[in-house]
Image (cartoon, rainbow, N blue to C red; front, side, top):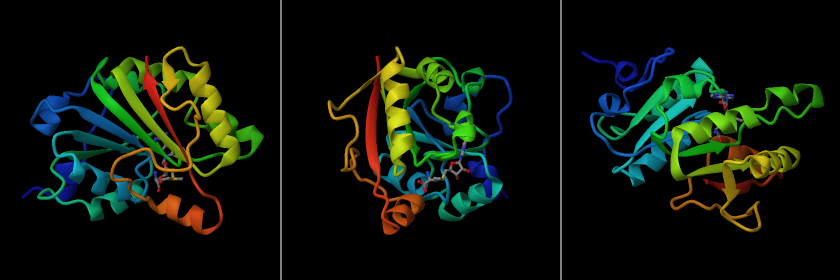
Length: 202
Ligand SMILES: C[S@@+](CC[C@H](N)C(=O)[O-])C[C@H]1O[C@@H](n2cnc3c(N)ncnc32)[C@H](O)[C@@H]1O
């Protein structure tokens, strides 16, 4: 009998994933980078059974948190990958095969000497631009003001993305059926409300 981990976990190497085979259909595929404890990946896809969702999370403990919230009967349009997303994502995800991306509260790495570890950098944006379909959107949120400014700068200097909103940072969620993640709830409780951003691939 298949365990839930067998059902949900997708192994990646250096070759292109067959998304249609993984999900058993040709529905649009969205990715989440940094699924954390799994609030979003276990909830939002239930509002969109016509889409598939691939959640990436680098930490095994967090993958186990996600798995606890998922069941094949309820979350058949979700799969997980235990892997650090970086610019190499375009080596195992086909060009123009992803309908959109969600990046919620990426680690801010606040110390200047750690800024190079930040997820959102030009090399990642170049790779994401390659795997996203034209007009795909990337939804980003962060409660960290300085990282928020950094993210805006990275997206607006990228030749591949524009902000959907004239006021790039929004105080209100810009998604239907907004899911408050664990990190968003904790940070808001400590007095750090989120900024939401929505970018479109051009
Ligand atoms: C601050 S937490 C936010 C988790 C969740 N999105 C939320 O809002 O509650 C950041 C998460 O991203 C994961 N992460 C960090 N870098 C990553 C990467 N390059 N690829 C995939 N996951 C990553 C961390 O392990 C952590 O679970």
